[in-house]
Image (cartoon, rainbow, N blue to C red; front, top):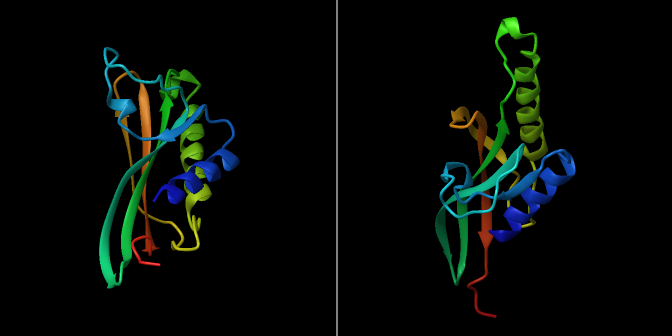
Length: 149
């Protein structure tokens, strides 16, 4: 699974060089200021929350139906009300989320994995004026790592 994660990180870094952070998602956005963790800078993409259902093929080989979640987090300090004159910031955030989608849709991370396909997306706000665009991608993976040589 680490190959999938690394391929996704490298693709995002290549396609979206203006991001300030690309990292594994271990709950950084939900941690309070009093908790000890590496600082999160914005905009960032966090990758994780994999979920796999494995099907045994025998002799140590398995196939999975897997999901991985990618979260784009952006700090929103601009007034985006219509009267503000800076409501185009909403469009910029949406365009950045679309760039992330386009960077990952149909990405084949390894020879043993099918291309990524977006299955679900949502957006939500977090305290501290943080907007999160979350996408879940599906893929299948063939694993022979437990096969005897």
